Length: 219
Image 1 (tube, rainbow, N blue to C red):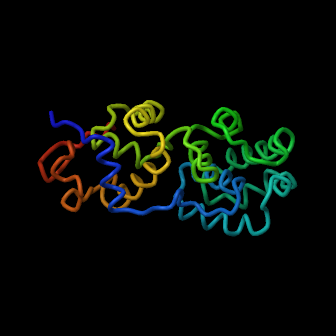
Image 2: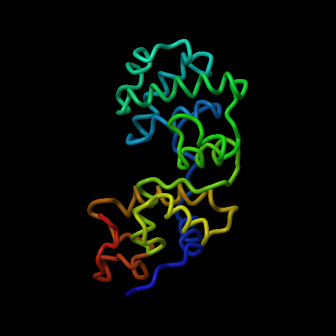
């Protein structure tokens, strides 16, 4: 079996080829980023940015959101998918932020994951992009796919993949690795018809088509 590429090497190489922002979502405040990240579940960043451009023009703070009925919010975010659950969580979260945090977004993983609709991935994005805090690694579909293909993790569970990545990468780099892997996943290491001939890891990757290796992605 071909060995995996060390994560530190993957990180270093990706840094030389990509210069992504801390998040691809558009926002002006930590609260707006929190809402945008919640809406991004099972939805593209492009679509979320279109929706929030209109949404945040009128509704900017928890005080604004709690004035909305669930039905009103559902209409505003419908195109992001799963709009009923998302609107329910956004409204509940807005109430909690006002009642318990003075309308501010908490700055710890423990507090964030207690909020409705907020998991470790969302919390890690907020903490890094909004506050510059490294308390975890956001594992989305691109990170899962690249972690498996590059042999960085044998797991399918995002939590276990996150643990593998955190163990192999210095804490100071945790925040950067997500958007670097997303950038490569979008440009080259795609879910279907991956472009191994264009890949910077084509000779060493344990899933390289160029080297006639099977795809290690777990279905």
